[in-house]
Image (cartoon, rainbow, N blue to C red):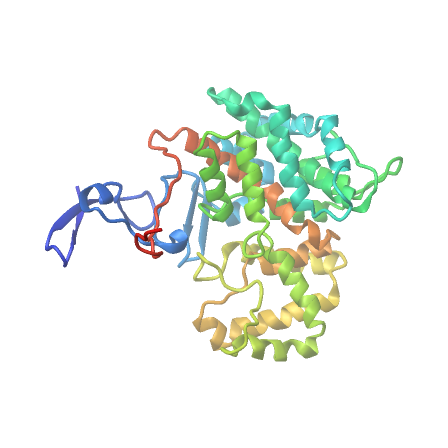
Length: 422
């Protein structure tokens, strides 16, 4: 057994802690007995050096720009498999065979409809409500329609719970969009695939046929796959934290949606497009690059750098290639694209960005692709939710099967007043 010895220079006492080795990645120091042995806590704002759990789902190597779901490279999954293949993989731990995929697809199609009461909930929201607020509320409300999922013990019941939510999330997102416009809700079309059906519910009108180009379906399906899972990020940690209390699984996912809404997390691609619109013209790019490089200017380029990846975001590489395909096939906003391409070229060649490892990330490209698919900015984070729900649910199931699980309860370094008298 490998151990590490920590010595307290104040007292001269030494303590041994076990070193745990993962399948891939850096070793971890098991400090669960730290407070009991030493009377001290670790101090780690943002948990940047803390592993909160053991997981078999996702592996990230930020230095190499590597991302794997259940051992499979994200590039292979995004280019050789569908989003539903990826969903099955995350839920079941293996890729489906052809018949299993057909059965899984059919099950999600049938479960994509929501209770009519959910429609009444949406009607109660003001037209100005943000789609993410509506989605968080609607998912929480689902727990009232499926309260039996509060306690799910068997694997079969867990799969029913998970698949029910994954199937309904696109419907809830499309309803949120249509409510914001005050136009009729469109029910799912059971004849359409998962990704095509979402675009159909966004675009269709009663009594009118709606054909969705295959390339657009493929583009959205790829985005869903790339967003499906990403280890212990802020929203996933939120889902796990809420789940650790024994809350309803849909309440846990609703909390994850709220965490994802933040501009520093799921809302980043929305900010990228807003910033490109603010720049306005290729002629203005150099001025904004200068602002970004000025240490006295608070301006930051959105869509560059990543908390984990210290190399090129592997998901961004896939989307960059996809964006090039879309540019030739559908109407990508030419001015926005020109601005983005100039910024990208500078960032990939300028030592300021290279030395700081500020490479374009997934948000830089996904916003442009979603814009090309005529999806409004207010819906960008909802797209993220659709893709990420399977990851959240997979993490929820893993947590609930973990014999070492405990309620999430970080400690703190208190720096307030000492004891005071009234």
